[in-house]
Length: 303
Ligand code: SF4
Image (cartoon, rainbow, N blue to C red):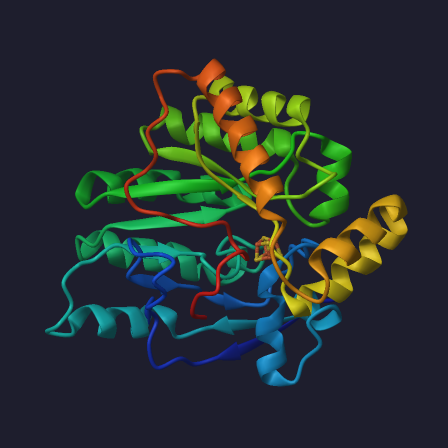
């Protein structure tokens, strides 16, 4: 689980950009993730499995051992110098949060945004952390130069539930203030409700209050996604359910098993619920962003 003593290990990478080949995300060509592992420690985080590549524990080590790609700016400049580079959109933070606390020291995400702006390369970024406000002017200038959009990941406005699910992440109220502030600066901001946790964040009133709060703060709903179980997330999530919501554990065990998706009937009902709520709150704003950006930790994308 989450640790107050996170160890940061500097590594060098050959390339900053990872080619996205999954047919699941046709609009996404390139991803960029400055860090492996994430101090935020969300109990539902899919990206935990990536630590098993290094013989590390996906539960305990994912938040306590974070790899820092210290040469990421140089690697990105080299990537963008390639003759074959066509200035396609770069999706930042597809695997782990690019504004997790260590970014305050290394500023790798900030450097990447600056390089992309100078090279007139469009980008999108997903985060849960208010540290992105530090780079608000940079994001606005990248948007003017080449195109940029920010995705804030927010699954509930219940402060206590959020603290329990996402123990080291700024509160929902703080994230909504980010939405408000960056929208005011002209940065396109949308909110991803992902993952929606069955039995925890999926009720009619929870989703209505959340979507209303998004629009009240000048943002808009980007997309939503129901929780998907990855095998290496199971240990962390089940231990948390056992402690915090034991009555839900049998349902999660039965429905998700070792890994998998929520039942299709549930997905359909949830999608209809969100569409109905969204239409009632923002009937003229049902358009979705052209390029999919995804919540940190919920995509099987390159690290
Ligand atoms: S879900 Fe995102 S913010 Fe949370 S631990 Fe995973 S990578 Fe970090």
